[in-house]
Length: 188
Image (cartoon, rainbow, N blue to C red; front, side, top):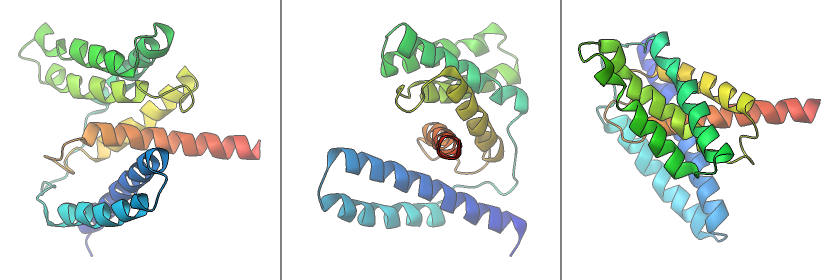
């Protein structure tokens, strides 16, 4: 098996696991019944089929530039600040950050670099939407931004055309950071 096929399969399994965790958390919180299990058992194979059969990958693997993903923590911290310190709420905060980020390419219309920034800023805004029960401080947000940046760097040409990629990768960064915080707190 080639490295490309192996990395594709690992990325599919990783993203599927993250989405299953996300779905399970939603169903567990809102539906305290056996419908939760049935829903997950029906949705997961459908997602897997979409990943395996869909044209989600480019043939050449491209990597996102490090200077682009440096804007993820800027979007995350700004959204977190608007959400928790100015009490605007998660949706208004993230949309305000995304709206402001959408104007960055207008600073210099010929810049390829500036055209890539709105997606990174908006991805960070998803991290900033986290509640303080999940993301208790700015250090957590910065750590989640770091892991999300790594995921975005390696997934540049993976899952192209899939809606929700930025939110899913931001969620994955928050999950990884939560797991690390849990390990640190349980062994400290």
